[in-house]
Length: 251
Image (cartoon, rainbow, N blue to C red):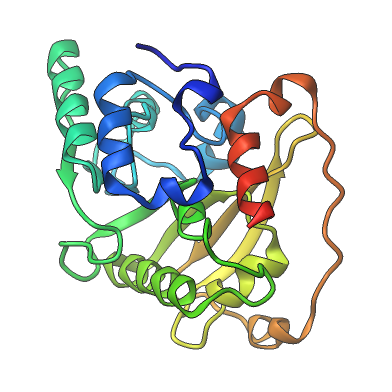
């Protein structure tokens, strides 16, 4: 099936998103779903970061078509898409083969233990993948230790595989006052910038560049800005993105 109604594919509770068997079952049925909008909605933010020579890693690709979009943008330095679900990986491999698409490698891998050498990629992208780690985080201002540990493992892996001055792009619901405490942990050398996109329903586009950390980043942990006002239009209220966000916030 193609992208289904949110109620047909969402697990009974948000914690179901942490169950690998849920994703295997879902990907076995679902052909395509773009978490947090497709490439056309954030192309104006991502395209300026792209060049033909880039090597790119997409973490948590699922059944997204972002890898193919990057090829169409002219990225030719190698695109690697990873997902924990072997079902998702095999279905993407089959789809790419049926299309005759070359230049995208799809690999089964755990984002908490990426199987790549240090400094392997110029650009790492995750779109909604990190958000899954927060589904049972408890108080968003004080996440439980398991959540903190897993988020830090993910970020440590990404920081390790980025080349010097490489860029990590995180597309997420996570507002800056919840994410920057992780992004700006002392062990990371990247700078942190962000933009928003979306018609009323804000998604956050973070750009972190390795080796470019500023002194201002070191003091940000003492500043908690006001949360941005978020308004939603009708189609966004019905999307699984909204259901996912609502379930997470209710935990």
